Every structure is written in C-alpha cells, then in structure tokens.
Image (tube, rainbow, N blue to C red; front, side, top):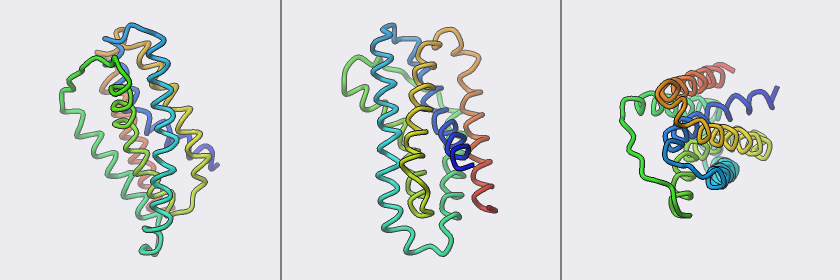
Length: 177
C-alpha cells in the first residue's frame, strides 16, 4: 500500500514536469538532450524530497502533534498552486546548456522538496518515495518531451488538472487518514 501511495504522489508531482516538457518538446529536437534533461529531472526528484525530509524530520516534527496535518496542507497548497498556474501563459526559452537543464530540473522539483518536508515530519520511507518519484518524473518528462508538438495544444492543461486532482485527493487522505 505504501508503494501505491508513493506512486500516486509521484504521478501528481510529475504532472508539472510533464506539461512543461510538452511545451519544451516543441523546441527540443535532440533526443539525446531530451534524455539528459529527463535524467536531471529524475535526479532532482530524488534528492529534493530527501533534503526536505531531513529538514522536516529534524525541525518540523518537533513542533507538530500530528504531522499528517502538515502533509495534508502541503498537498493542498501544491494543488492550489498548480490550479492557479493554469491561468498563466508560460514563456519558453530553449534549453541548450547545462544551466538551463539545471534550472528546469530544479523548478519542476520544488514541489517534491515540499512533499519531503511533510514526509520527514511523518516518518515516511523517503528513500522508497524518492526512487518512485525519480522513475515517475523521468518517464513523464521524457514522454512529454517526445510528444511535445503532437499533443501540446490538447493535453497541456489536462495534465495539470489531473495532477491537481491527485494532490487534492492526497490532501484529504492525509487529513482524515
């Protein structure tokens, strides 16, 4: 059951990377660069929740009676942020060097840092979660980059809406679970 929960979280966290990858896929014609970018996103989705977990387990858990409330709040805030970002038009500059790759990877992985904060406070298996997040984010990023031009206009907003739904669902599950 733990693996299924991490898979649902990993899919939810990967939706922003997926939707942005579709957009960037319009301009990224090099499959080798798509693979490298996807690997970086996967690595960031592994390390960001671990860093967040370390901070969460040492700082936040000492001040909360029930850390599930924090996890629920983090999922709720992330879902709202994804929902409100649907209104914004995203401007794309080409990814053509290591700095752009790192910036993209960091940006789409910030939400996994927040989840790591909550997971650290509630003593979740962060290594398993990080591995699942890595695989999900790599697959969704790579798929989004490869499918970019074909499905951008149809799927971009729907992927974010699906991610919002998953994060809202997890927020309720942690609040009442």
